[in-house]
Length: 495
Image (cartoon, rainbow, N blue to C red; front, side, top):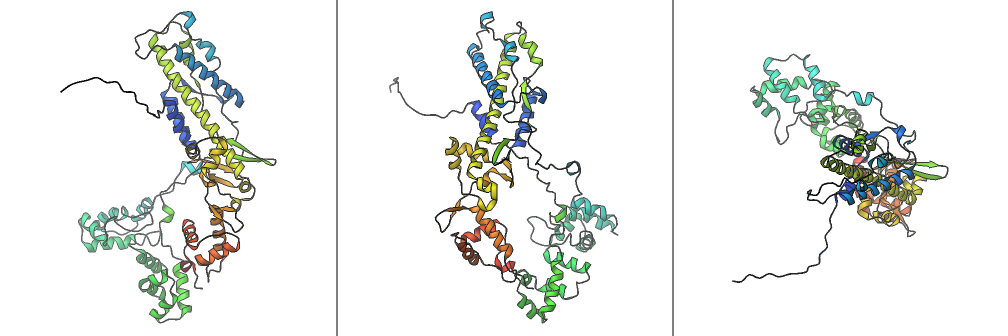
């Protein structure tokens, strides 16, 4: 057994992401609201950062870029004078090697990359939309329970039933396929009869149809409230609900031995019922979108303006000016300040770069989609990430990050930047049309069809070919489903 020592030369490539690059990538994929949150957190964690008042921030964009370059040169100077990583070498205190902190701090303000005014086109929600909320379904029903005549044992069942209502108002227990009243009665320690009695009383509450265990019971509760439970309406709900869903009028008439006119009249009453009685008590909060960029038409040209409203304007904290002027500051304090300064510069530079990148990508999109901005969705052009990446000299992954979860306010409305990237559908003339434009055509055709004889997917494909759009039936079906449009058999009206 021998031991020997050898030297080997090996060539390899590694991709190392510096902290600066990681921060830039992180900021690039944040939305406007997420960036606001991150800046607030950084203001709390980095003592060298503070929010500058708008009155002290320079308005000129080129001045901001020049100031950023000055900061980067300064950081390079700091790095060249920093001791080695071991920390054993003390900071040099000779006058010739001292950093001119005061000269630097006289010029530390950064301006936003775009003017802070953003136009008056955005309509924000009023205070009443954010300071209050409506009652939940549980709260709404609980307020009515006091008016019911409940026995003591029934009162033990009530919270268990109300606690198991889904967002549509149905009484269901997740994972349990039988009658949910059985496990509820067992948990409350009461008989099935008592639990069923409590459920029957809760089913009289507003909204009508709440606490039903299935669609049939929900519609029957509403038929009872309308005085139609024992009429043809109730019969159709109890015996022919599946035929009603498939709009098989003939089967309903034959099963009940009635005329089509009577069945149609009963169906009209049923259509007035609500299959989701608790839809107005949804717990989902409205989603407010803050655009990351605005596109305004000024004269005959479109101007891109990055939204910096709400973003704090960062600068070095005033309280550190005296500390940095003090030549007697110890090495540990200056080292801490230098590290925090470097972190602050990375953040400011990354925000500046993010805003510039968003603007460049949006300007490229505007150039490609000028017809859309002028005339609407029907003129949207097919476009992929590579088109924009090649146009502005960036990588596709960068364009993808910029356009993810970012919204643009245009004369045609507010859209996610991803919306403008569409696959193309061939036309008979050899050109291409964007898939979103095809969806818009499908939506128009369905809206204009005869409800008694709705278009089939094949018919829609044929009509699109008449408009020089080459599309297969299965593609029409896929787009129709994406638009939430029912198939022709379920769109058909019987009267």
